[in-house]
Amino acid sequence: MRMFLISDNVDTRSGMRLAGVDGVVVHEPNEVKDAFDECLQDRDIGIILITEKLAKLVEKDISDIKLNYPLPLIVEIPDRHGTGRTPDSITRYVRDAIGLKI
Image 1 (cartoon, rainbow, N blue to C red):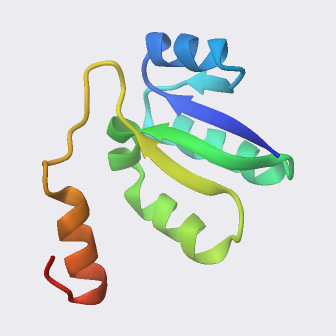
Image 2 (image 1 turned 180 degrees about the vertical axis):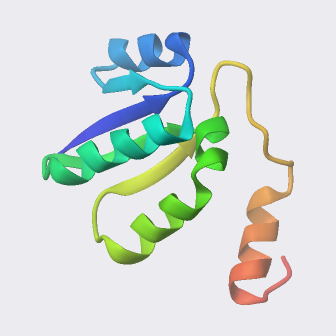
Image 3 (image 1 turned 120 degrees about the horizontal axis):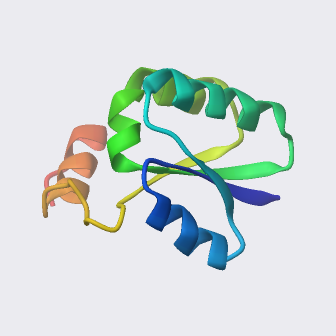
C-alpha cells in the first residue's frame, strides 16, 4: 500500500514528493472530490494525506469516506504555514468522542 497527498500548496507537495509520496495540488472543492474519487478507485492507496485547509472544504465527503470505506485512512496534515488547530484539539476530540474529560 502507498500514500497519496491532496494539497493546496506546491511546497507541501514538493516536500512529500522528496519522501516518495505522490500527490496533486488542487484548490477548488470539486477538484478535491475528483482527487478523492480517483484515490478510492486505486486499491493500492492505503493512506490519503490532505492539508487541513482543503479538508475543511470537503468535511462532509471526508466523513462519508471514513464511515463507508474501510480504506483508505484519511489523515489531515498542516501545510508549511502551520496548523489551524487549537492547542487542546486532541483533548477536545477525546472529550467529544467518549465523554471523558482529561
